[in-house]
Amino acid sequence: MLILIGLLAGIIGGMGIGGGTILIPSLLFLTSIDQKMAQSVNLLASIPMTIFALIFHIKNKNVEYKVILPIVSLGIIGALLGSKISSNLNSDFLRRMFGVFLFIMGVYEIKKGLNKKDTTPK
Image (tube, rainbow, N blue to C red):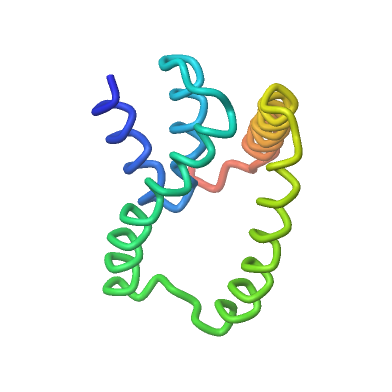
């Protein structure tokens, strides 16, 4: 089961969608680890997946370099703050927050898909 979870997380992560959207819920539902541990596993697993996906995207010229520095520099600050905050929160609360986040993103994507106009020639 872990092999399948890793494969799906890698495919989704390589597409730039975020492997954690598959990895974290899968680890929570199919293993006995808690939310904080699932998030930690996701962060560690994302490193090699991200490196290989990035190499591919750089070769295909799919990287906008001018936006990297501000995103990375502020992302580091955000990661430090988020890690500090999550270490002080209950795993059940984090799990609910993650569920709400996924729900909101799902509703947004469905709404965006429904509002998309058909651009195929007739």
